[in-house]
Amino acid sequence: MTQNPTTHDPHDTHDTHDTHGTHGTHGPADRRLAHLDVLVSGASVAGPAVALNLARYGARVTVVEKAPGLREGGFAVDFRGHVHRTVLTAMGIWDEIHARQTRMGRQTVVDADGRPRVDLPTMMMSGDVEILRGDLARILYERTRDRVEYVFDDSVDTLTETADGVDVTFVRGAPRRFDLVVGADGLHSRTRRLVLGDESRHLRFLGHYVAGFEVPNDLGLVRTGRLYSEPGRAVVVGNYGGDPDRAGALLVFRSEELRYDRRDVAAQKRILAERFAGMGWETPKVLAALDGAGDLYFDAIAQIHVDRLTAGRVALLGDAGYGATMGGMGTGVAVVGAYVLAGELARAGGDHRTAFAEYETRIRDFAKGCQKISGNAGPFFAPPTARRIRSRDRTYRLLASPLLAGFFKRLTEKAATGIELRAYP
Image 1 (spheres, rainbow, N blue to C red):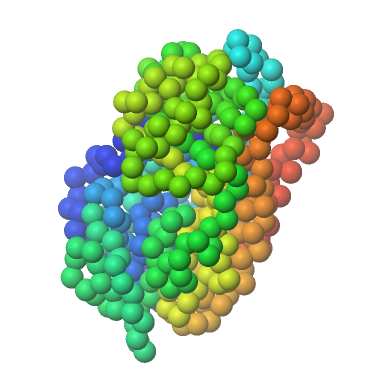
Image 2: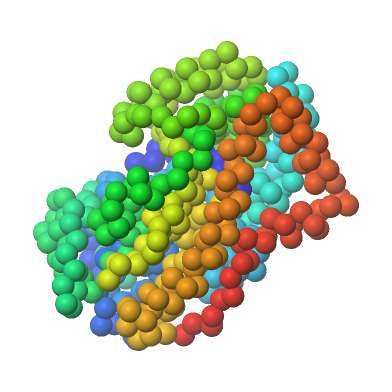
C-alpha cells in the first residue's frame, strides 16, 4: 500500500549510455523467441521488466520512452508474498532489490501537535521488501541495456497492424515495423488509446487526488514517516534513506473530479495550495516548499478498466491495462504481468494469438483482485469526517497488536498471492 515520494528529479538521468543505443553483443542462451521483434512503449518499471523477460528468450526488444532519460524518483513500492518473490527471483533481481531496499521503520499517525496516535503496521506500509521506484527502474535498466535497445526522448505516434506485423510511426524517429507491441506506458497510456479508444472509456475516478514532492527534512526523520489527517485531506512526510536533509511529502485530498491541464504544473500547485490552506501540523511548511518544488507528481486516484488486454498484435501491461494510482500493489502486478506475458509467448513459441489469450486469462482476475483494495487508499489517508479518522486509528491500533500480527500479514498478502504461476521455460 506504500506510496512514498522520493527526492530525485523525475527527468534526471545519471546514465552516460547513448540514448539511441544498440543491442548488446551478448544475448541470452535461450533463443526460442529470437524470431520476434518487439516494441515496448514505456521505460518506467513494467516496460523494462517485460523487456528483461523477453530478452531472456532471445527476443529483439526495443523500448521507447518519451522522457529524455531514465525516470528517477517517484514513490516507494513494495513486494509481498511468495508470488512476488518467485517472479523476482526468476528474473534474477530479488537479491539486488533487497540490497537497495529502503529499510523503512515506523510510520506513525500523529495529531495536530505531532503527538503519536498509532503506529501503522510495517507489513501494511512496506510489505516484505520496499524499494524506491527509481532504484527499481535503475536495476531493470542496468540488467537489460546491453541486450535491449532503449530509445529515449521519443514516443509512439501511430500503430497500423498488417498481416505480418505492426507498422509504427514515432513522434521523432523514423517509422519501423515490429512483430508485436507492448503498451507499458502508464495510467494515461497512448498505446491503449490507439488500440482501444479514448481514456474516458477506461479511467474510473475514485474521488481523491494525490501529490508528491520533495521538502526539507525539518522533522529530522530517519527512515520513518508521519501521517496527519483532517477530514478529506492528509499530509505524509517521510525520509526513506539517502539525503538526511531531505524528505518526501505526500498529499491526498478528497474532491469532485477536477478539470486541469496535466502539463500545467503551476496550475496543479495552485490547486494544492487552495485545498490545503489552513490545515494544521506541518502543512504550512510543506506548502512553503511546494512553490519551488521541481519534482511535483499530481494525479487523480483512479483505476483503469478495459474489456480486453490485447488487440491483435498489441498487448497492454501494468498501469496501461489494469492500473490503480496507489494502494493496489500496481508495481507488483506489473512485474508479475511482465513475467506471465513473456512466459506465455515462450510457451507458445512466439504465437501471439495463443500467448495473448493465455495472458488475458491468467492476469485479469489477479489484477482485478489487487485493484479492489486500491479503492481504500484515498479514504484511508483522508477519511471524510473526524469520526472516520478516529475509527481508522482505533482499527489500526488493534491490527498492529502482536495478537493480530499474523492475521494482518495474511490479509495484506491475499491479493498479492491470488495467482497460480506456471513453470515457464
